[in-house]
Length: 227
Image 1: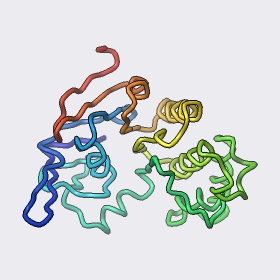
Image 2: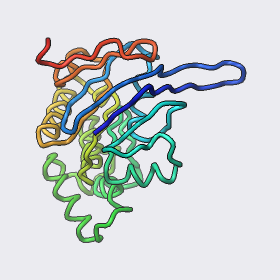
Image 3: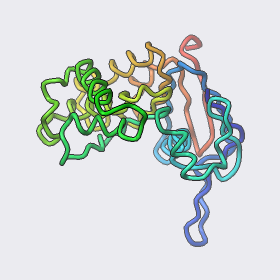
Image 4: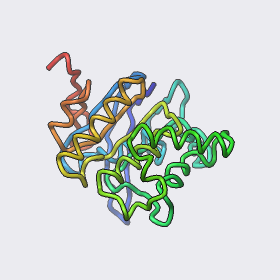
């Protein structure tokens, strides 16, 4: 599904050039559950942004489902990303002026579903995540765990092939964090390819594969059955 070949990402600020990713080679098959770990500043979030087509590499190749996407324009990347890739962030990124229902429906607004079909899909995912009774509430009226479940509902409403999670439990207590991890595991069991950035060794251990970065390079790439 994902094939990175010698991917490098550099940022320049004035006269200073920083290499965030350095000749990364990485393949991820459809249906895998991959945890990306490493110290702060090692390139984890940069890698996730590239995988999600939010950024492009300075050099190297990125093939997504067999399609080369490294040199595409921002408009082309947005079109490729739509309906195929979704994100779950640590900060939830919900719109407080909108209800839970409308926050989730945002993920479907620019797709091909009719308004009626969108509302039905939203109702389905809210029911699945135990949020039907909160559909008319606003994010500020919810607990942190409930807000993250809304964010997950929004992410899966379009039934993406690839789900990218950046520290999805970072703002949650341990109980709500475990609940979110259980939901992510269920989604992966149903066939969604899941790539998660985490600082938690406990949560990383739940993945079927662990990729550890250091100084922008892959230091360790280990499958669970090798541990």
